[in-house]
Length: 218
Image 1 (cartoon, rainbow, N blue to C red):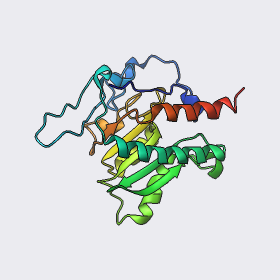
Image 2: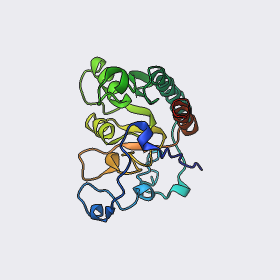
Image 3: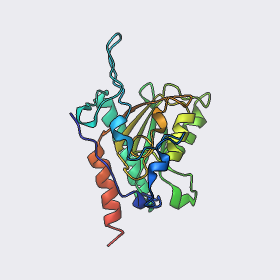
Image 4: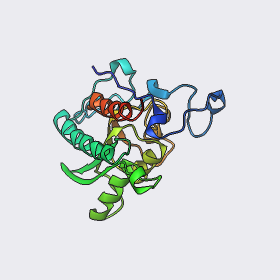
């Protein structure tokens, strides 16, 4: 069993603090926001064998990661190295790698500060990198490894790129869009759904973020 690690300090990742309003109005909104973070209803796809009964919805207490753990950790460590690069140029340490058939085809770190580009999050940088080498914009068989749960913008970009799988390190309880606040990648009303796996090197991802802010905020 594994316990998903959350990173609640969304404002430190560059998002505005959540406004304390009554979210009941969102309960039935077509965009799918729930009154509380929809973690209990996350889509939990497993990599089962052909013909197996694959459980797609599980409570957090019964979630067990059934990913190819060796490869997942290897590629997540590559994403963590990129996150460290982001910290070296005073950007919040988030990294992302895109993998196709066991080969990294795109990589990026958060570059918002150094590039002064509000869209230069790690996932978008990695997607742009991959688009330079792949034959088309569709990334149907690509797996994305990202050290922090994607925001709405990045989740939307991954969705539009048609990536097949997203593997996440730490969760972002206040602004994450892949389970914490929204379920952008698992919304059946959209044209594409993505298999999502959680808590891969989550402690390392969270510690990198904490260290970054600890050394910059007394």
